[in-house]
Amino acid sequence: MNPQSKIALYYHFAPINDPQAVVLWQRELCKRLGLTGRIIISEHGINGTVGGPIRAVKEYIKNTRGYEGFNDLEVKWSEGGAEDFPRLSVKVKPELVAFDRPEEITVAPGNTVLGTATHLTPQEVNELVAAKEAEGRPVTFFDGRNKFEAEIGKFKDAVVPDVTTTRDFIAELESGKYDHLRDQPVITYCTGGIRCEVLTVLMANRGFQELYQIDGGIVRYGEAFGDDGLWEGSLYVFDDRMTLNFSDTPKVIGSCQLCNTPTAQLRNCTDPGCKTLAVICDDCHESHTDRVCETCATKVTVNQ
Image 1 (cartoon, one colour):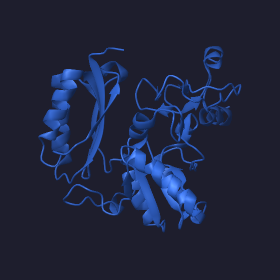
Image 2 (cartoon, rainbow, N blue to C red):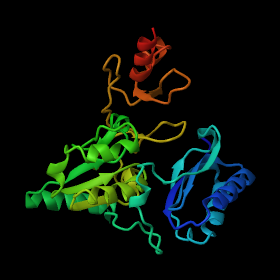
Image 3 (tube, rainbow, N blue to C red):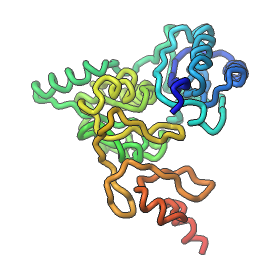
Image 4 (cartoon, rainbow, N blue to C red):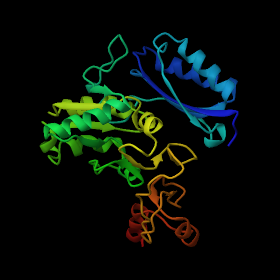
């Protein structure tokens, strides 16, 4: 690990009239500073993860905060650098998070999402859990990520929706599976917090009445409590590191799909056109070099 390199993770909601112009500016800025990563721009704001030499990343943040609407952009720092990203990707998309419901999201002039849930600091999360437990109304943690991410790390006793992409959440919420939670205290969580900004609006629109979210997401909570809080396991991250731990002795909650050995290792499907990840231990990864995911295996069977 290069001590002179850093990764910056951030998102910021702000009305953007010309997303394509912001993309061109951001792409040129990153290229000039030698940064790589992934940045999404929409009419709702910006969502990015960039890595590189720490001085260059700080210069990038300074420049980005100079844009009208991004002045209050908050950054979460993580170990790593440009080597953790294969390339630079800066794109315009309809949403910062692809729930396929852009019409339900409105960003107010103060750069906040209208109707999003109450934000809790990591300490407030623990306090709320204790208070609601004393009232006899225990809090339910609701995972706002894709299902595979929860296989290696999640909050204790969390509800994990059966979703493989964020686009699956609407059908899942409308399925009736979680109707019993509509009048219960629910804390949603995701990696850095951005998915919950939108997810809680979508949940409120579908009848959930007492919603909270963790300010800064799992990253901020893990920084505060390490592995001594309510989080268990490893955190999946969207770069070549694959996983992030909050201590040297994280609890291993994942198990290899092939042999059930406890592990937190996530591996890509070997089909070059597939991005599906699975929990596979080191030994099985080395001994099953042609392993494909269930979806690709089904396609092979059908085509035979």
